[in-house]
Image (cartoon, rainbow, N blue to C red):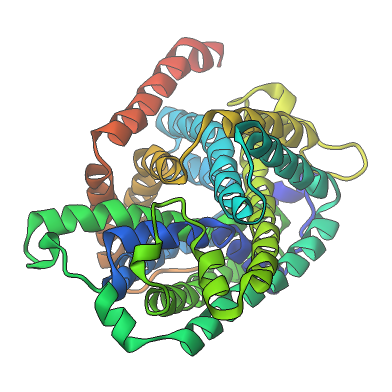
Length: 446
């Protein structure tokens, strides 16, 4: 296959593929989202955005499972969009996606680093520049861990997954132990937009906060980015996607429910509150809370590790096709990984870390920049595969077709609208800017 021709080796099995999805999904995202969700959806209502986020992820995951099993090559959506639309349209869309990924990668790294330092401030008070130095150090460490052969990267990912699962299970177990039904009732203050499920304000609120939970689920498709390095990809890619979504959804919903019933909402001052540290201090005391904060640092690093691994392959694939700077098509001479991509985008991520201040802001930017460039075109693409009778290319076919694909399209449109004009115009601007660059430079060059 193409992945083998360009020097990438198929050495990752189902277990490693699932783990790399899961550590990309978890990271600091769900822990940083806990206080944000509770402020908008107090008490027992806090699981609503998580349940909807899980359903959205499962529907979209089916689309990724079809495409990943059909074309298991390095690059994920960069390959899918070209295969789905073909010709000039496919090439243009692939370019827009590669450009969006170049923006998305440092944004995701920044969101994880911001969530991490918000928790570290619980242990060590830090000023502006101390905070930025810590974020820079974290990015540098992750780049250093990835600067090696893919077989070694897989082993590091397995080790990180153990820490990640332990943290989630410990949080859920502690929440079950400290759960107070009376406190849950007190926290579950009904807001005006909860008066009716048919209230437009309610669903706009749901869409706004679900974008935060969807961000915490993003990563179930990481295996598609490294498709050229997966063994038995026609089976392992869809299995790893569905497994990771199912396992993580159960863990997220349980964690949100128990924490909502164990911490008074009055203790959550704002969306940047280190809620998990506060929660563990309430149950065990400060010393244990400090230990938990240290574990969260490892979890955040594991997420950065997985996402930089996958996204570096997208940019590498784009460069190989002439849709990115040729520099990024370079592989390390002895370790067979895209070394220049890691180094350059690690540097860009450091710049972003210095520029951004709020995790919730970065969450929204990340989601809206992908809806019309990636998620919706892929959902439309799987429908067109049936229309054009290209089903022999599919090694996995989603159940309940086309209901899940149509549902996915409608939900992504709702999330875009509910995100607000501030973020919506940013997403549209990215598309228009990319289209102009493609017309002026890439197409002309080709």
